Length: 541
RNA sequence: GGUCUAUUGGUGUAGUGGUCAGCACAUUGUCCUUUCAAGGCAGUAGCACCAGUUCAAUUCUGGUAUAGACUACCA
Image (cartoon, rainbow, N blue to C red; front, side):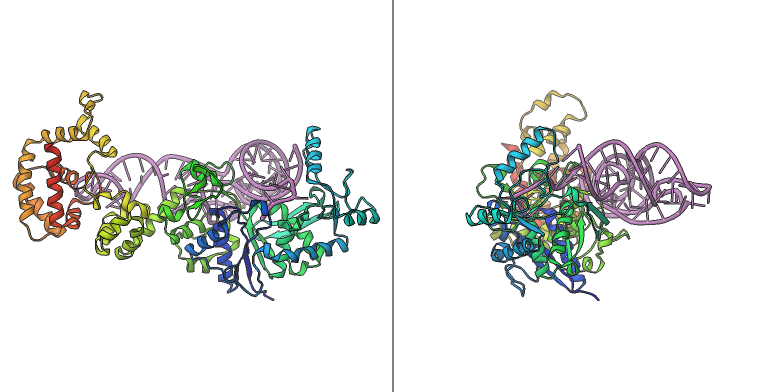
């Protein structure tokens, strides 16, 4: 008998959703859609102290950007609503009390401070494995150690208390993980986890088991960091008598930092200069650079490329295939093919994927995608047709949507000849291989360019004629411009390389990039001549 | 410290009791070319280590090492 596949992605709104979480959401989404089941988003906001304003909206927006629409969520609703645990708060206490009644849980009156002190004391004695167990020889104040009457008295005094799971010792707790196979723990290693906090909120453990049960979740796909608490969850299912409907577990390998040292965290974005969040996010109540987090979207990543890349961080189709649309991922995805070992975040591969996706788009499609990455005034100045041409010129040399503007500023502004990148290249040219040429002391690019120009006196004179020729031609297509210039070069017995290098420099302020003829065709006659004149003026100064 | 999980080139991965250990990214060279890319071709580079099982082990078993996760009234 096949249960309906119902999976949930259960983020906690404590900040921006990070990319490992996005992958978890993806895998959940894929499994749900593959089995025509439901993909549910449940917000796990049981820790009021870690609540971050806007985090939930961020999570939903990020999923929407990627096209991972949930079937049920706080926004979309659903027949198992509410989908926000804080809105379900009244529900949990009765379940915790139920466990107390059947002896699977108990009241504990120890304060946080007492326990903290105890832990510190034990650590000072060299005992790092402090656990809270009802059967341990500590003077814990809980309903296991106290008499029923004492417990009632404490409760009657309205003393704050928690409800803890009662874990019996000497028991093997085993379960089968879809990715890791048979996993087992000895209950002696578990401590009596808090189920209901003194503020009346459930902990993750209680809330997640109760909700998964009530929401009829069939598979729990989550990060490997949850593996050690899974036996606690198994115990909860047993305690409630729900073992028949316990979901299947699949613990995903972690996405590690690029250097392999630990799991990818928000600080790593700045540290390695890579995005680790889907969208930009500004952390409230945080000052300085740490507050701003740059997202994949704002880097100029395509959702399809991000999804494709992410799918392959920890999963493969074992046939060498790498390109998948979301629909294709749905049909090919298999939990069994998920890798077991932690995977380092491979940003180079992410870049490459993005480039591949950008290259495949039609120019018209790209034009629309580029537009938002231009400054507002430029967006008004240029039509889609122009942007499409720019896209065509740049699409094979660019990794991100933002690069179309950053790498192709000359398509939108008169060239900046004093640009720093140009400086290095020019210095190299003028040095002509000499290790230490004093002329390198020439400070400005202008001096260096002049020096270059002077090196080719014939060229200088010829250019005047060439510009005139360009001015006279009516046909401003790439091929015709090519023929025109090449003819000219042959006639004057000039070097193609040199002529085109100067043309490129004059038109774009660059020493490399798009085809010179394509560039001229894109600019059109008026702008091309304007730029050549601008270059001449610059040198005349 | 304890528990758990993992280990194929620099990275992501495929795969098998007998393979020239495959692919991709990155990297190097080369072709194409006005440059830079893109693309083609070629190259460098890998089964963590030690035992055991076996005619044979990268593949199975055990141990070691290393790495990571967890070890909260956080998720």
